[in-house]
Every structure is written in structure tokens, then in C-alpha cells.
Length: 157
Image 1 (tube, rainbow, N blue to C red):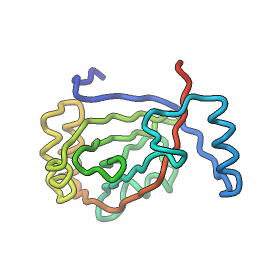
Image 2 (cartoon, rainbow, N blue to C red):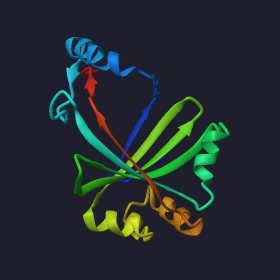
Image 3 (cartoon, rainbow, N blue to C red):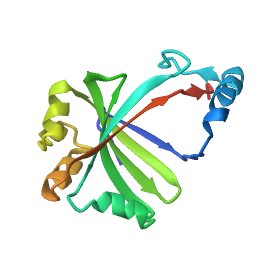
């Protein structure tokens, strides 16, 4: 897929683990000694991520996840550190065991439009415009908000 310049694309494999509260601080210390702390970490608690997830009235996307559908996508708006002035609209695709994420930057006005059900801000990004049309045709609405702190680390390769 040829993406327009306004769209960023990330492909990766995600491994998720349940970690007890008791182990969280110990793991942070270990990771901090082995990896580089992400520049977005504000302090030892990282940074706040809030995501507004969209779905149909009958939760089609959520039910695909529960049913184990290996090729699916979901739509969300993500903001950081409770700053609604800037955010990202993201399409997250599950492709077997791989994850692909397409993101476009959006501003406060576009965030509020999309939360109210107007997906027209996506029209100017040809690589994700289909998602806005799909969301409109299938009656997507803002369904839930998930907020959490992320402490991120990386390696420079």
C-alpha cells in the first residue's frame, strides 16, 4: 500500500503480559538499566494515554476480537497527557500474529467532530479516507474511553 505523507505506518508483533503490582517497580528498575527511557516519559510514571474506541451499535469489531478473527481492524482516537489540542486517529489492524497501525495527526476540532460522528476530517488523508466512509456507512459511534499510564523504553535499533 502506498501511503500519503500524512500517514505514519508501524508494523510489529505485540506480546502482552499480566504483571502483578508488586513486580511493576522492580521491572521498571531492570528495564531502565538495560534500555533507554522514552523521551515522552514525564517521570517514573511515564505518560498518560487516552483512547476513544469506535465501534458499531452491535459491537462488531469487539465481537470479532472475542471470536478470534485473525484479520480485523479497529478505529480509535488517541491523545497524550490529557492534551486534547492534538491527537491521532489510528487504524489498528490484526494480521495473523502481526499488528499494523496507520496514524494521522488530528487537531481538537477534528477530534470533537469525529467523537460526534462526523468522520469528514479523514477525507483529506487518502490512505485512511476509506475508514471514515466505512465508519459512516456502518454507523460507528464513540463507544468507550481507555486511559492508562505508559512507561516506555526502547533500543536504538
